[in-house]
Length: 287
Image (cartoon, rainbow, N blue to C red; front, side, top):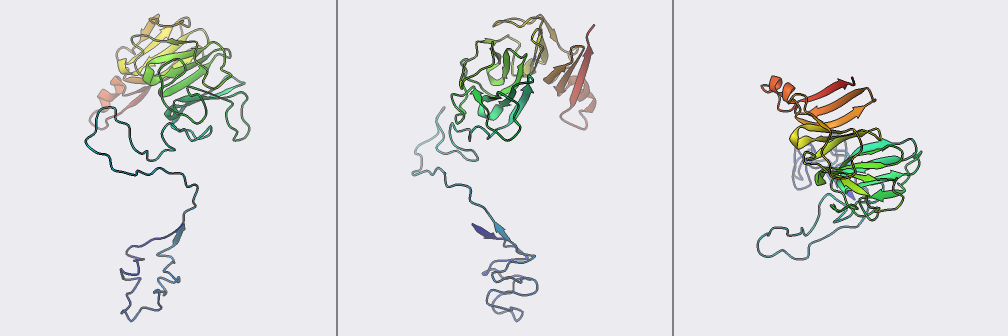
């Protein structure tokens, strides 16, 4: 497809202008108005360059008739814009809002948040190769959310201790756990960790013994000294003395703990007159 820009410096043939004189203008220098300021046969040039659009495919959806009546709760959409389609991820290498990425030294894991899935490469890729396994979806093409042990809804963080796999399933308010690294597409988690304060979790850290998960809606970081086996209250809760806003990221080297916080109460109160959003990193040292 070929497009030509039209505007004040390159108006169309029916829209004369200073650099594109009309048919009765004495400065008109040719049937298609070429000249020093508009030199091409169909007005291309420095003020009207041709733009080439490469056609990448012909797959599209088109409505055939207008919907009747009014919208009702739960009514499905007729068409989808700016996406591959309904329940279509675009394939194994089409990521949508990728979030957490992690490696245990052998595997590579990616939380493909917008596609409601986690992608697994069994070996660290050296080229742009497709993942070997997808979980959260039955195949590489699907992307519907789910809330059973084989589904996900906006997974944000993925971690492994080399044996188990942990996935923060944000919109389902839980952490999914596989006791061994999944080897088949759509493999269900062995169980889910939940807690009343695990509300809209984003951040997670584990060394295979301790587990920490952020509850952004309740401004807390939940800490378990041992990996829980299901629904469980944390051993203790971090609040930064009430200064957490919506803690998002957690990392540690085993001695120091760092928590990335969004809308920190401590710093937002100091900056409210100038900004609406603040960020802070809280650091703690193990005693």
